Amino acid sequence: MCSKNTKEIHVLLFVVLGTTSVSPRLQCSTSRHLYGKTTINMCLSLPSIVLVTLLLTTSSSSQLSEKRDFTNQGCMGTYDTTKLARLNRICEECYNIYRDPLIHKTCRSNCFKNDMFTDCIKVLLLESEEQHLNNMAGELFGK
Image (cartoon, rainbow, N blue to C red):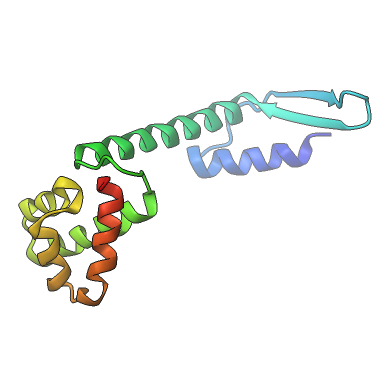
């Protein structure tokens, strides 16, 4: 009936919690499609429901934090996680060279539209990509 799911839940609990001693009381239900043609068996345990809820909550709160960082950096344009990550990585690499927190903060200020960001591009020998990187910053900034 639900034995395969139970084993998977035990493995998941062991990996996440380090134990399988949580009682996996399974709630099994059957759903039928509108016309009775499709049957779906669903087996859920309380620990798995709690775990999934925690994972979804953590994921959505980190997304909110990222968007808050986006606006705190002075960005008012299109929120694009790929572009933002690429430009943030340049500032992180620049910070890793000098180990000065002010460089990291200044590089990201005004949505990467500043002299520090340009200097970091040069220090990291990315001058061949400078125009492309500035275009990305412009899209995030909201030209």
